[in-house]
Length: 396
Image (cartoon, rainbow, N blue to C red; front, side, top):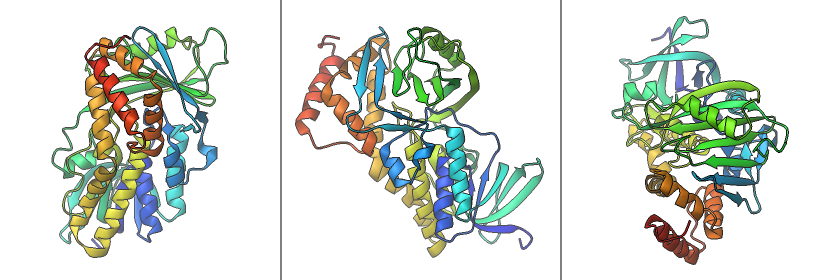
C-alpha cells in the first residue's frame, strides 16, 4: 500500500456531478483525484435554470444562448408558445461546459487525470483500490479513503458496489449538433426558443427537441422502445423543420435514467452522484441541475464521513436530495405516465399548455426547482382542467 498514491477521495467521472463533487471536496481541503475518460460528451439539450447559475457561480460567458420561450408541438402539429415572464433559461454546450467545470476543480486543488475506470478492490486497511487505464492505455492503480461514482447512467462503479445499480430503467437519447441556420421562411427555428415535439412517429414514449446553442443547435429524440430508430426520427425532424441541409458537427447517444436509485451508498466508503444515482427528472429529462446538486450533496456526505469515520454519513446525500426534490420527481413521473403513452393523450397535454396558470406554474417550478404553492386557486383550476382532459371531457 505504501507504493500507491493515496487520496482522501477519488471521483470517477468528470461530468457536472463529478466535477462539482471534486471542486467542493478540494475546497474543503481534501486531497481529491478527478478521474475522467477522454472524449466523453453526453447527448444533452444543455438547458440550465437561473437557480443553477446562481448556486454554482456559472459565468455568463458560458451561456451560448438565453431562451425566452418554449414551443410545444402536438401530434397534430398544433403549436403552443409558452413565454418566460421576466426570466430566461440559459443554454450551454456540454463540451465546453463540462471542461470548464473540470478545470475549476483542478484550479481549487483537485488532481485531474484522464483514464478509464476498470474495477474496485477492497484493501485490508479499509481503503479502496481503483484500477483504471491511463491516457496511454496503461494499467494504473490508486488508493482512496472514499469514492464518488459519477460515471453516468449504468455506472460501472455503481454496478460493482451497490445492489440494484444494474437494474435502472433508461430512456435512450440521441441528438445531433448542427450549425445553426440563418433565419429564413424555409426553416422552422428561432435562436431564443426551445421546441419540444410530442409526436409518436418521432418518439413513441418521450419527446423530441430542438434547442438553440447560439452558433449551433441540438436536435434530438429519446425513447425506451428497443428497436425504435432514433437516427431515423431525427432525420425526419430535420427534414420537416427545414434543417436537413444544416452542417452536422457531431452525433451523440447515451442512456438517460429517469428514476433515482433506491440506494446511493455502499455502507462503507462509496456514494453515487448524478446520472449514476439516477437523478434525471422524469418527463423533462432535465439533468444538469440535479447532477450538480447531487454532486454537492455527495461531497458534503463524503466530507462528513472522512471527518468522523461514520459510514452512515454517506446515506445523507440521498436523504437530503429526496427531501428537497422528491416531490418534484414524483409529480413529473405521474405527468409522464398519464400524458405520454399515446398521441391522443399528448394532443390533450399540449392543449393544456395553453393555459396561463399552467404556463406560470411550470416556469416557476422549473426556474426555482420546487413546486409552487403561492396560487392555490390556480392549482385547483389546473386540477379540474387536467381531469377534464384526461377523461376526454374537454375540447382540444
